Length: 337
Ligand code: NDP
Ligand code: GDR
Image (cartoon, rainbow, N blue to C red; front, side, top):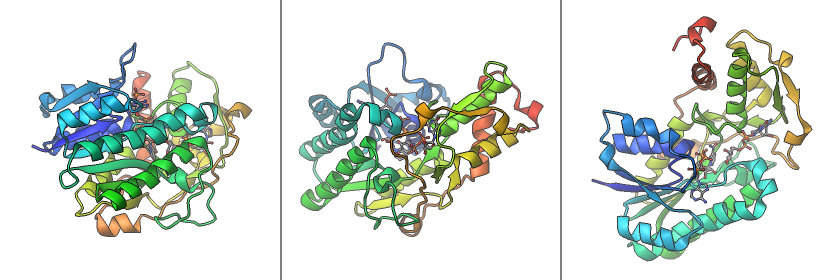
């Protein structure tokens, strides 16, 4: 039985990846932070899923900033595959907390990479780093691919660039099977509530439930290449099944504005978003990236990966799940599950 270790297992992607690997028959080990309230909400249904053997999911306390703990975990578990998804992943928060963000995103990645290199033989282990399209920033080149020059435009992206280069270096210098998944935005009903898509679908459901009257947002003209997290975790795994490590852009190749997302989400329940949305200047970032669009030809050719979920299906799934969270029947709005 193959063993995988996931740092960031309690996050959006970590929970989908854990499910995916358990279904493939892996023993999955996850690193979780101690929290005064539970932080395993996204994993609870995995443990309760009767078709999966919950004994194959093991959670260990740890923090990506604590190298001695990472050394011990990697040394004791001796995983075949290590996925580093742990991050302070909110771009706007990274402007407020740049030092902490760098500790987690940049140094955290290097600490787990070093724990892997120093504990395990390079022939036996494969390493995945959650790199982001944010490394390209406001690029003059569109669409962006693996050759696009890096131009990070926020502290989070600067941290991801540091990690990106270290993964490449460990591959070249030590022959480690290490890969950067350069993932463009991916969303789902499990998306954190302060990212814009989930904020919109959750806000919409709260408006329909009569709990809120308005939804406050920032830059509505920003364009993002939005895919579904469930499709993207498959690409992570595929990268580690290749004979050599490498860097791959994972994207849909379609870019939409925040306004487009509002139109589709509110349109699904026959509301006009302009009646409900207000701009809050506090939500405008010191620098925002105007537009991302990815060219994932390399992944499509070499990994045989392509996205399965359309923009409309993604938005619909998120709206339905947030209506249900508010105790509203999607049927009432003509949304069949
Ligand atoms: P989330 O913010 O949902 O999850 C982040 C995970 O990292 C959580 O499990 C969180 O734990 C954990 N974490 C944060 N700080 C620490 C720490 N100090 N020690 C250990 N664990 C920590 O992110 P996503 O699932 O959306 O993204 C996964 C990864 O992919 C991240 O690295 C992100 O930067 C990157 N990425 C995401 C994209 C996206 O569109 N979603 C696109 C490109 C890259 P806790 O639950 O306790 O907070
Ligand atoms: P992003 O995602 O910054 O691309 O990072 P986010 O959903 O936060 O923002 C997308 C765009 O929407 C604009 N926006 C708002 N954003 C938020 N969060 N809240 C608002 O109210 C709001 N109004 C408008 C933003 O300005 C931005 O242009 C995500 C994260 O998952 C990163 O970890 C990941 O690396 C990148 O995607 C790829």
